[in-house]
Amino acid sequence: MPQIAIVGSGPAGYYAAEAALKQWGAQVQVDVFDRLPVPYGLIRSGVAPDHQSIKAVSRRFEQTALSDNVRFVGNVSVGTDIGIAELMALYDAVILATGAPHDRPLGIEGSELGNVFGSAAFVGWYNGHPDFAALGPDVAARHAVVIGMGNVALDVARILAKTEAEFAGSDIVGHALETLRAKGIARITILGRRGPHQIMMTPKELGELGKLERAAPEVDCADLPEPGEDALLEPGLRKSVTLLREFAARGANRDKPITIAFDFFASPRRLLGECARVSAIEVERTAVKAGRAIGTGESYTLPADIVVSCIGYRSSPIEGVPFEEREGRFANEGGFILPGLYCVGWARRGPSGTIGTNRPDGFGVIERIAAEVTPERARRGRAGFDALASERGLDIVTFRDWRRIEAAEIAAARDGSPREKFVDVAAMIAASHG
Ligand code: NAP
Image 1 (cartoon, rainbow, N blue to C red):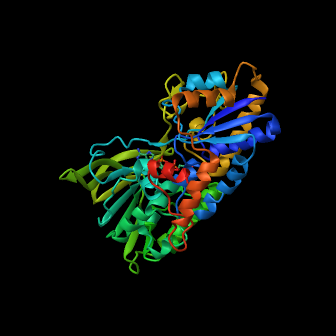
Image 2: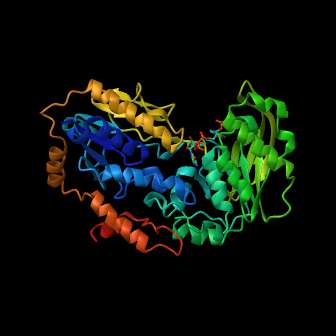
Image 3: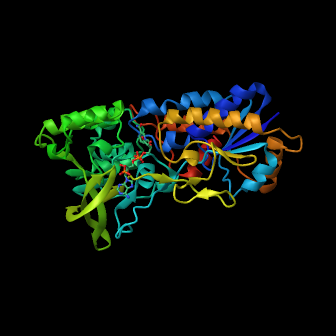
């Protein structure tokens, strides 16, 4: 019976587990490891709290998790509690589904100033990730600058702009709701170093900006290319650009207290501060040549009391595992890293695509494993891990334990909210004991 270890219980991990069940049925044992006592990775702590329909995919992963042949092994950190080489010695195949948890660095002067955040931290904060619960952003600020023109930038701008009532039905954590209640933001500038034809924003998500209660998007007509040029775009991007044209046609926002301004052809050059806190951002005007942003030498300064950089993510390297520094992901060929070691999801291809993109990824890597790996009797798999865990005194959180945590989170929910998440590992573990 093949013994498979999957490191990471986010969408990439659970789609791979689902694929393993499809491939081998009852003839496989899959252990899904997570360093946190709670499963689902980005579904829990990355997907925006007001996008509950996307989060609902966790129900599908639950079906996989409840199979007799798949086991959740929470609260175990691979690299600390057990080494990757140890896992590889125990299991026939190890699949890294560790995602890309770190921000791509902005790398400009002033990035270390106070109230400057990467999106991994900021999104983690409002989503209750224990690593970022104490982030403490100051949103009493008037001017927010969001860097990047992808869907994460949209999430961050929307969360900064929404009223408390607009969070009804979401699972935004209490500490974030409390902080955002006191917000003083009047202008959110979304900075893109290229133009409207190069945005990475998808239409559904972009369209939401046009329907906010107290905020309105603002696009300068002069930034938009000739309408005829849209015909060459792929359909999704064309829809997004059509939305930008609609926003531009509405004119300057005079009706709502918060403006979400799109600033295209604007590359961040330097963050300026007062008393170690960000106060402004210096931006260079760009021109797009052959798809690339080229600085024009003209620069200007925007007020910025809070800055969130949403420019992409990097995976965490693991000692002994080949890593592509420039791309920020594991060196792999179609998911294969080394004999017996594979990767899926963002750990394989970098931070791109939707949740669903991980499904073919998982199925593809399992097909490779089925073709390339011959299960060996010598590999003790689950039984071997359990022996080692008990020797090391690891406090494993099982899926049954997680359901106790989940029940406590549901019981603590605000009216209309699906859950109030624990934001602290010790509290999660206490709840897992019932
Ligand atoms: P993304 O889509 O790759 O967008 C990153 C943005 O950052 C781009 O506009 C990029 O501009 C810009 N950027 C990169 N380096 C920069 C720099 N040094 N200075 C200024 N700008 C810079 O990444 P993301 O928004 O983090 O999203 C990651 C993935 O998650 C995407 O596949 C996204 O669709 C997905 N996601 C989906 C949803 C949803 O479906 N609801 C929500 C959130 C995230 P250039 O293009 O010029 O490089």
